[in-house]
Length: 124
Image (cartoon, rainbow, N blue to C red):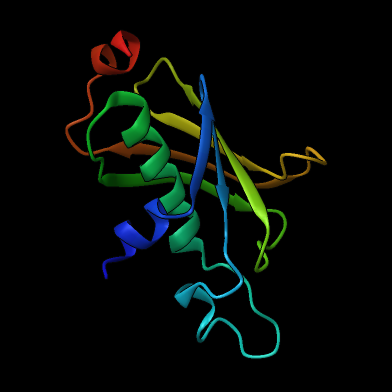
């Protein structure tokens, strides 16, 4: 199974620009990252952002580039993650990954999506 399908299977709900995912305890992403101290790899967190934007605009999205990334807290097995998307005036997307219950920031990313057009974002 592809990483995109695995990450997509974590999706739980959406409300406007907020997308909630449950990271299962048996996720294959934890396999080698790290034995005895599992945490969700950054590439999977970026995958959550791509999946959220794809759900927002109604088509799959590929990340073209990341101009900013700051990890503040690890994502552990069984944890819920909320991805909050905000479009910036320069066409990039600000994605903030949060703990939905506590409101703690997990990660902050600014990225461009391949073939993404601002108009598509506003229509949905």
